[in-house]
Image (cartoon, rainbow, N blue to C red; front, side, top):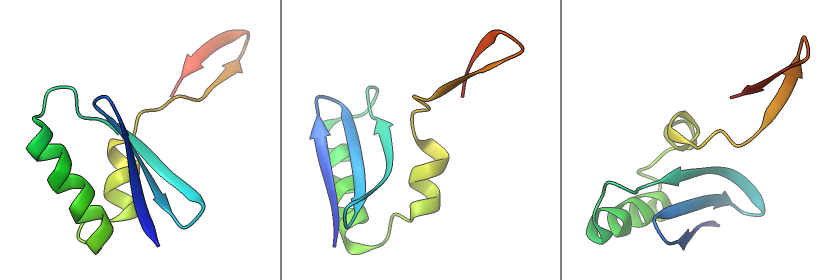
Amino acid sequence: MRQAIQRNNVVTFYDGINRVGEIDYYYHSQAYIDRAIENWQTGILTQETVQDHSLQMEFDFVGGVEHWG
């Protein structure tokens, strides 16, 4: 079951218990966000699209330098 949880302008998308990604809709209206959530739930919005537009919150250290993805 696909679900989406909205916190302020950020929506986190889940497929079952698996987190697919998180998109910040800061520059969009609530109606736009609602359509994105509906599109996710009906399968119109794909996992690939969510992942392509997701916030990159993870970081790693390469050569002693912090790199944000």
